[in-house]
Image (cartoon, rainbow, N blue to C red; front, side, top):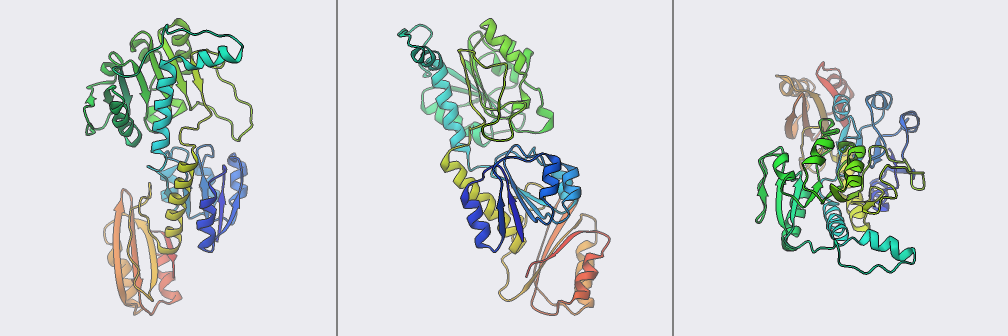
Length: 398
């Protein structure tokens, strides 16, 4: 079995897959659609970060692919529905870099509030400009968190410990932690926050959701942070707000278009603005986070390959069954229609196959049944299962 790992993943990912008997090829940068199609011929496992786009066209051409690992929080770079229809499992790392992103957000809030980017630039230019004008503590200021998921909620706790007042808005119902206050609308949050930070997910519906209207609703002089997705913010509107002075400063880690590889040229309308911190999508890029992500996602992929476990998959029914010692395992992904489990077991009965253990899970249009059998598995039984009209993918694991 072969795995292709792109975008300079942590070596731990390679170590885990190699130890499981999987041959691993590593590529430093991202691949475009045509390059990826060519590279995936004969490859069963794909590991990516945020740049490589796994489209329906890629999935149609990648006949051998059985699993994709997104070594990141987001999965919007993968057509998850198309992957599911082809029986390709997708995994991500929803928690592993949370702390790294939170710490960066805190550091940027303090840096902007104390005007550190401007002072740093002047010092490098040989200008001594000691002044308290415009510099503040973050203690007592109001932080508005847009998106109260894993990152937003942890940032809430740390910000409160630093003496900030925390308000948040999320389109879903979320439990407020500590003394944080949930706001009834985004507009209400923008009117109260001294600092607004975005931590929303990458679903297509969030594209361009923060633009000129939202910036104008922010308090005069408020600060703005985006460490979530580049395409959710209108950069031209942000620049206009900064130039007018209505927005007091900004920190941006993600951009609508980003270079594919380290060292590639980068351009942004926000370059050379004194009150702006620009970083190259490194919110989760600490050695600790990348190590943990490498271990977490590679382990999910390994367990799917060898045991059929879909635990924490983002597009297939989640299932994990301890395997009976000495048994064979059949993993059957199928259309979620009535009678499939009975039909599967009827095939086993017809061919004299005795079941040691079995577990079924469903998710949307898909069902997934894992069956352990002690003996009696024949090629004819396997073919009968594979040829069932509802079968999406059949794998004999051991």
